[in-house]
Structures are given as structure tokens and as C-alpha cells.
Length: 342
Ligand code: SF4
Image: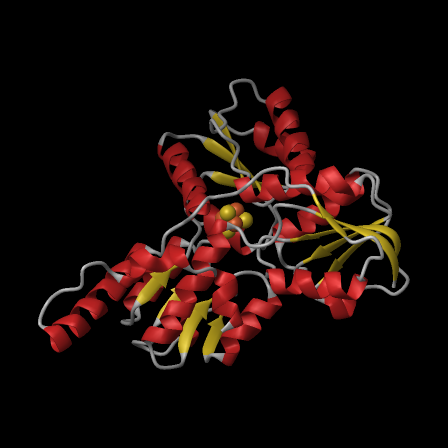
């Protein structure tokens, strides 16, 4: 490589929802003998999925593939109500690692549907988050991917509401939102956009550096919506060479000049470090944080309850008294990166 300088986006990589999901699945592998099952990839990153496969986790796309009574985790993207019901009926422990910001959109859809709204949902067909969200009120919701979808739905009976997938590119969302507002008077929108803080922060950080970079490298998987959104952001500010890579081994040969680097919300920092090592910039790595993220999502309530019960049982057996605090309350003391490094 003949790279002069790397501009490293900040924030990048793991968000609070991904931290929560990875740590929760790690707890499952400690508490239960393998195999632990997981409905869909826990997060959309091959490195993370392979890590858990090595620990005996089996990823399935159908609850029917989970043996009766086996422990099961539901992925961070949020699952359809029918999947949750089938999982619970399967007889084993079920922990739902859904991100609370996805749950917020499920809730908005449920409420608008109950109030008789026709809901326009901006999302990507087939993406697990979109599938899980739309299944909350299929009778009321319509997938919006372009302006002609808005035209079609606007001819239906109102009132209308507009919701979205959490991980869209800001430009894609804003263009469709503005079109819908112009088309549909009295369109209901949530007070805060459904695009999550992690998505908007990572895009803002990349926008800061992409315009002045000769090339941009986005680390993350092809099926990660927010990773793909980052590649669109880099292109939209005029960067002509934008590369999405799973790992350093996929970096294109011949990168030169100033290279911007970022990572999707499900890509571990260890992959970023490997990319930086391979780029080996002559003048070093420059970081200019646009914001500091301190969001933290605690473990799923079912997992907290499970850990609390197990710890109480162990403490009572050995010391005859209950523990002062519980292991779940110390969850904040370690990171998903530390879990993956073990
Ligand atoms: S990208 Fe946003 S919605 Fe998805 S897990 Fe992270 S915080 Fe939650």
C-alpha cells in the first residue's frame, strides 16, 4: 500500500444494541451446554457469527429447526410476533435480544394500526428488521422503497403515518419523507425519526471525512443495512472510490493518498485495527470525533432474571445467603469486544 494518511471516522463500529446482543448471546453460551440456538444471525457480521458458531451456537431461520426445549436467542433485529410465540411454545428458555430502538418502532406501528392509520414503512424488502416490524400489524402497513410506492399508498384510505427502518441512509430517508409529506397532508410522523442514533452518528462522522478522502473503506457485511448505508453516504458526498470489505484481506490493492475508514454498527474494532495495520499510512491515523456515544442498553429482562436466579441458587447452596448484587448489574463493566477477544 502507498497510503499517506488515514482519516478514521468516530463514532464507528459497535452500537449499544449490538453490544447488548453479543453480550447476551455470550451469557447464553456460558449458562447452557451447547448447542444454544439463535434465530437469524445475532447481528449481521460474519466474524461475530463465526465466533459464536465456534462456541457451539447454531443459527436457524426457522423455529421448527430448534429441538423442543433447547435454549434459544432471538436476534437484535426484532422478530415477528408469530416467531416469538412459536419460540415460547417450543418449551425452552427464550431470550429476545431485540434492540430497544427497534421495539420502539414496533410499538409505534402497533399504536397507529390500533388507531386506524394506514402506515407507510420505509425499509428494505426482505431485511430481517423490516420483516419483523411489518409483521406487527400486516393489515395496516405498506412497504415503501420508492416514490411510486408512496403514490400507490396515498390513494388508500387515511389517516396516514410514516415510519422507517432504523438503519437507512439519511438521504434515502429524507428524500422519501419529504416526498410523502408533500403528497399526503396531515401525515403523522414520530417526534423523533425512527433512524437510530447509531445510524445517524456513524453517517455524520463519515460525512466529515469522506469528502476530503481519495478513497473510503467501510468495514462490515453486505447484509448489514447500516453498513450499506455508509457506502451510500460516502458516495453521496462525492467520494469516487468506496469499498466495503469484510476484513483487511479484502482491501483492494493500490490504495493511495488519503483513505477514510469507518465500520458498520455490527463490525468489531479488531477488524478496524487489522485494516489500519494493512493500510499502514505514512503520516499516521487521524481521528476527529463528531460526538461521544455513551448509550448503554442493559441485558434483556428474561436474561437478567435467569442470571439472578442462578446466582441466588449458587450463593444459597454455598454460603446460605443471597448475593449482595447480581451478575447482570455488572454487565456494563465489560464490552462486547472483550467478549469476542476471549
Ligand atoms: S444500529 Fe441502531 S437499531 Fe440497530 S442495533 Fe444498533 S442502536 Fe439498535
